[in-house]
Each structure stands twice: as C-alpha cells, then as structure tokens.
Length: 199
Ligand code: GLN
View (cartoon, rainbow, N blue to C red):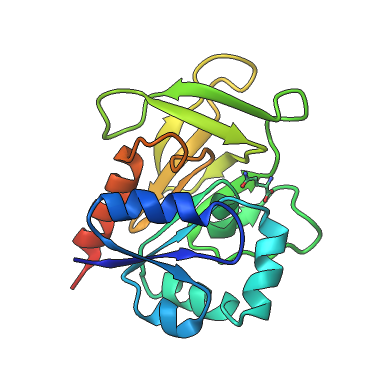
C-alpha cells in the first residue's frame, strides 16, 4: 500500500494522519527529508501559510517538497495547504513564497472577518452525497488555469460561486478542512489519485 506523508511542521497533522490510516494507507508525519523521500504522496495541512514557509525552510524541506511536487508527486493541500500549492497568491504577505504546482490564484482569508469560520454543505465532483465543509479563515480560489478542474463551489450567500476545491493532475486542494468530522471521502479521492500515480 502507498506511503502518504503529512507535512508535520504545524497545523492539524494528527487528524490527517488518522483519516489516512483509516483508509488503509501507511501515513507518516514528515519533518525530515528522509521521511519525505519515502512518500508516494503528501498532504499539506491547514495552519498558517507564512509560518509554514518559514518552518519548511528551517527544516530544509522547502526546496525538496517543491522539487518532488514539480516532479509529479501527488499532493493534497487543505486551507493553508491550498495556499502552499498555489502558483499565485492574490494578496499574500509581500513576496510570500509557495511550493506551487497548481495553476491557480488564491486569495487568503477571503471570506472576511464577519465570517471567519463557518460550515456549509457542498457538492463535490465525484461524490454522491454532499460534504459538510468546515472553513476556518479560509482562502478561496480567485481564478484557475485551463488544466484545472473545479471540484466544488460555495453555494449561496455572499461568496456564492467561489471555487473552494480543485484538482490538476495529481494535485488536489480544498479551502475547507476535510480532516475535521470523520468523513474520509475526500481523503479517499486523494488516496485514489496516489494509487493511480504509482508506477
Ligand atoms: N488563513 C490561513 C493562511 O492564510 C489559513 C487558515 C487555515 O489553514 N485554517 O495561511
């Protein structure tokens, strides 16, 4: 079975490890290059993206992760992890770097102060029943390149139609936190991607 890493510098690492383990893959926290080298795929969790960049550099993981993604390693980013996989940030901290890979532009903290955190039922491409999506100071996807598939949009309210889940090749990202609440269907989509991408 594949080995799927969870970048374990910051954020909700344990919940992702639990979701992946329950799907029968070997899930490992990644803090060192040797751990990254074992991985067939990588989850980049939520947290705070500028802090994650700093820590990734301190742990000498920033370039290695960027390279693995550029070489085709499947990766799944949630919330801050989505920002980390985006090629472009609309209004990030000055010069904010990312691992990149997804041909998308994201807007950080896009939903604004009044709606810092909220939950919503979302239809996700590839899943029959809606997902209860938890958003916490979430980004949204401002625009996508031609090879990016939109998996979910906000339905109703001020942010109606905003893109909150995408896929491009072996890369996936959600604005929300699928590791919260025990529904592992979105993790399963990623595990299927990793299995498909294995040689
Ligand atoms: N607002 C955070 C950032 O910009 C992301 C929040 C989260 O991951 N829950 O990095």
